[in-house]
Length: 472
Image 1 (tube, one colour):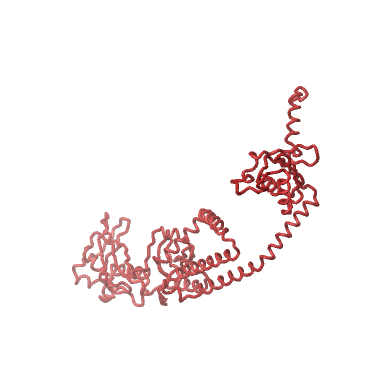
Image 2 (cartoon, rainbow, N blue to C red):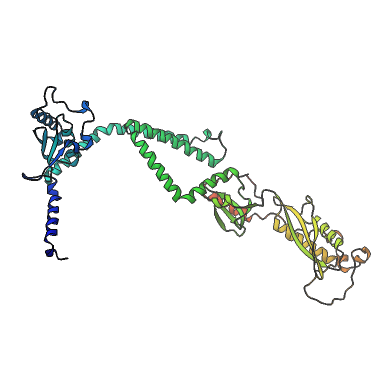
């Protein structure tokens, strides 16, 4: 755009810059533009609210000399306004001179507007712009603040002493374990109660410190800021807070205890401990699994250890030509003589299904996990039933077709059964009893590893142990 073609526009722009330049706002030399502020345009805080708030200059007559003298006396009594000159003519006050800051400038206008008889105020004041004057003002201000701080030090020392006393008292009460045992016997809940009591004592001490320092007005601000920060942290640390609350609920409910064998989130293992964030399992392979407590609290927990009795089952196939009832009775009699199988509840054998050339029997029996190992008992039961069927000449059906010529002896004929070579070599009790020296004892290898890990760990365990004795 060629400004030479538009001289009027250029002239208007230059006039605007002159009117709104900083020199037109603060006068520094004679002949500068001054602002004349009528009383109606003065700041509201500078105007009198009622007659009693005006500065009185005399009851008979309000003269310009009295107004000027009164303002001069007021300004001289205020150090930052002592250099202001006043000139009053027909109720119009003209203020000139230099002020150190904007606050002082507004204060001078406010005082002038409050004087009775003032019609308007002409603002001819300027700010101090020389470096020496500005640094002198800052130095005086800092000296004043330092003097105030020095005079405040005794109160600060007393307040700090009071706060340290409350801090020591809170720590002493937090270590007093016997004070919290009547309320709860749980270690984690006692720790939580200690933290609440300690926080309450420190909060009371903080309020007393604010009272000593005469700064109770800060309490509302601090509480407001703490509330906003707590809300923000709650959203930011939602998972952490959820896990912490879940740990409190789990420690109260106690759905499992140390060394319990559970299935959780498709992980099966023995419980090591419950911390404030996660539940730690040791799988049957000896691996550590840490599951967040929020997942544990909302998940499905299968606990094998709460009831020491546990049922096991397995399937066995017999030929379609074998008497089913005789095979069932032989299996049950064998289980009754197998080590680790308990008589109550009794064992049970049911026909699972009929195949094209075989019959599938499903056998159920019970063992007690506090005395025997579940997997070992099940393995011994399967072995005993299989050998009993072999002695009875009940071959397992094979998945192929074959021609086999043999002498078939029905189970209903005891005389013919006694002629079998395998039956002659073993006595009647040996056909159903467990083999001598069968090991069905508990396997404590995982339990021993958990015990060693718990003794060497520094993490707090939120579970209550039942003092189970590990049997070797």
